[in-house]
Image 1 (cartoon, chains in turn purple, brown):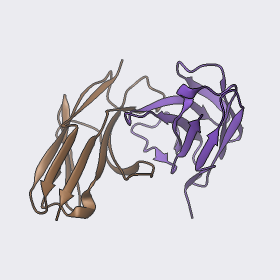
Image 2: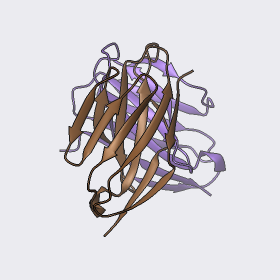
Image 3: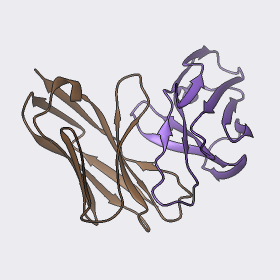
Length: 115
Length: 111
């Protein structure tokens, strides 16, 4: 069973379109994240939700809107896509954010290409 | 702001040639230092968490160590299947669980 699964794995779309990436975890974790990996392979956090509550919102354009319907799901919606949004987006999850050194488990990634 | 720098950016080894990867960090109140392995087209795969200076952890041919300023990932007698990008990340005291990553070291092991 896949612990953190995200769909779609590959997404090619035109500038100006709106798209969503879905994420689900079956680890029983209460914290979920979205990370972005750019062309230089740097992984940077975008958002974090704990029990459906937004707790981390890094400097991300407001065209990006996360939504957490329950603690096992965290979706990422992107409006008015731009060329610079092309990247790999990783969903991740961990146990309670307050616990020291909680391991964060990652999904397989969603490759977004904006043309 | 938490910062992580990994070196070298790329490392080529012959099979059986042991070496080390370095991760230098600055963090406010270290809660954990993490090592991940990432294969092409895959997500980061968890390897180790180190919590305090002096701690060491081992897994097969890998051994991670931690000081107050850096961590090393030692690879003993590597095999071609150890080829991957190795990522280091820190979790600080005020980070609400988020990880700050280094840029990674691309390891290639030739048979």
